[in-house]
Amino acid sequence: MANNEYIHSQEAAIQNLVGQFLKVRSGRRSNRTDAGPHLDQDSLAAFTEGVLSEREAKPIVSHLVDCSFCLHVTAELVRLDMAFAETPAAVTVAETAEPRKVSEVLSGLISRIFGTTDGAVFAHEEKNKDDENKVENTDSEDPKEK
Amino acid sequence: MPTEAKTSTDLSPENHEMIDLIYARCHENAPNFGVGPDTFKDSLAKTIFKYLGQDGSPDSGDVDSLLSQIQADDLFMAMACANGNERAWWEFDHQHRGYLERVARHLAKTEVDAQEVIDQVYVELYGTKIVDGERVSKFSTYSGRGSLRGWLRTVIWHSLVDLHRASHDEVSLDEMTENVGEGMAHASFAEASLGGEDEMIDHLTRERYRKATVSALEAAFASLEDHEKLLLMFYHVENLKLREIARLVENESSPLRGWFQRKSQTRNDNPAGRIHESTIMRWLEKSYARVLQLFRSELSEKGGLGHDEIDICLGLATEDLAGNNFFKNLSTS
Image 1 (spheres, each protein chain N blue to C red):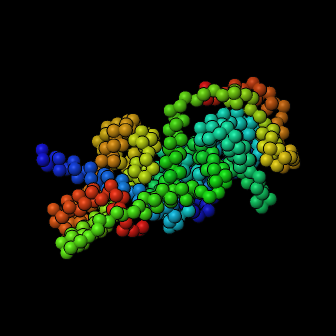
Image 2: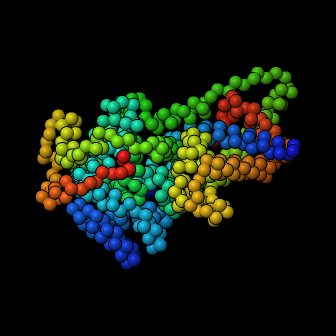
Image 3: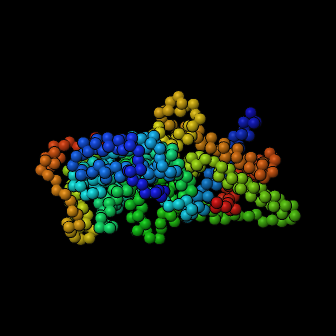
């Protein structure tokens, strides 16, 4: 019985010690550059989704333990993923609205950003008539969004 | 993760065959996206060598496994959008705009910020920079390894951080992270005033134990495997909740899950079983036990301390923790 208490007190002590140690260590290492370049968004996203194999994930995990910046970004992305996993998708007006053509979307954006609607910036291929008809007849509303 | 530039010509005939099948399926699903088979093959080769080319050439089995998991339709759409294909953009806008808006609104403080981020992301996705006479679309950085939505979440998150940094130019994300840590690291140490020879000896002894403890803890942590370190850091540094960590390893082929359950009977019995918060707690407990074991052997073997002295080290460290002063001698290695 006394031995159990001893073990528990040791475990509790090491937990606190590890927690404090890691917080301080993280602060001191935040500007280190020897962890190499930060992870790109594609790698961060794939790792957060847990789809990488052990071989693919090994260098990423190795980077994360040395780079507090990427560690923080990954944790934030895990939270974000969790938030959207728990929240049922609400139907918004935008989602039920007819999608816009890219030229319309981008012209609107450019006009807001630069005060111009210079259509020459975007050279898009025209849809043929068959495509237009096909699109109109396609019920492509994503059921996940409902 | 820089990798040597490789092309589809470096892949085996079996891999080529599989890519051809994937292409045929994608093309059947979206015949008007205007993505050619060679471009598609080169893009997949880039993905393969990015993720599997770290230790030389990937073997054919690894490539097969990656190809079987590739989000091919998402990649096909992203490639078409990068090329400015009108139909692909229409599909993208229809399928993902609502999701983009929800993520942006979830993250942004105001509707104005959310809208600004969405606009910015669309501009980046289309690409307004011209390099070597070609427009560079953000879509060209999507590899298809994860889902397009997961990638879009990441893009929005970064875009929002950039927006925040631009509007608070005194604070960068790096600096915010650093300041939290430095505050901890520089916490003042209220040293008790010393008087008399006995107290001086007592102080010197305590200092010796403290240094030995910190150094043993550093060595113990350094001896852990990377996945154990990462788990402890997610929990203690980033304050991720157990259920959030469980979410990260939810996928049955998750590498973290694989490493922690390597010798586990549970994995053999039920490899696809759900990971509960209690499982994560058990993994944490195992990691603490490993640290304790390494810590004790470090103090005993390298520090030459006896059993009772090791207990004193732990006791002193526990007493000191309240003052945040314990790790003032922590190295940054």
